[in-house]
Image (cartoon, rainbow over all chains, first blue to last red):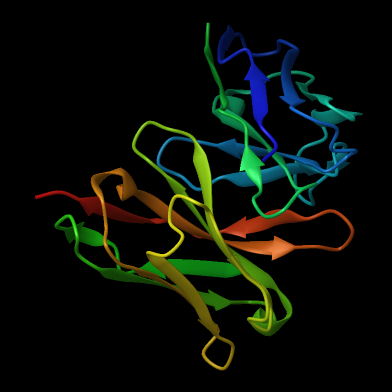
Length: 108
Length: 120
């Protein structure tokens, strides 16, 4: 199975900051990488699919990049509603699809 | 509007059984694969099972294989997860999620989740 790692596991940031989260796959997954946002007590929400495609309705301050094994989610200017946990997911080798362990973004 | 609503969670003793349901609306249910994904308290997301649109292809995580059964009823726009021989480590919020596979597979809609607690 393909293993996913994320760094950092958590970070503290201020409103307006540029935030970058990294996801790494244990083998090449081309661009089969999705990003989700999850707020406490809520279901995950798809933000980015195919590494860099913005899901409909998601603000343009979110962007994704990368291919192969290394990927990045960037929030260009952090907003109060962006404080959440972010997960990457590989869909290259499915099943099983695998998620990263998550990165929690909280208020500095 | 796409909606997925899970039900059937609750408290069950180890070794017991539970059947989860997911009612879908707002889209052509029979055209999409569906998934169950779970999240143990304070932990990350774990894929549990997938079923193709016509039930031709069914997959399970190793952790639930032989104990859980996924199924769907396209006439009722419903997805199910029959869980048998439950263990403490199956305690989690269970989400149903739609699979969209136009090129790159992703889970584009999720239900609100239903909590399963396995405890004596």
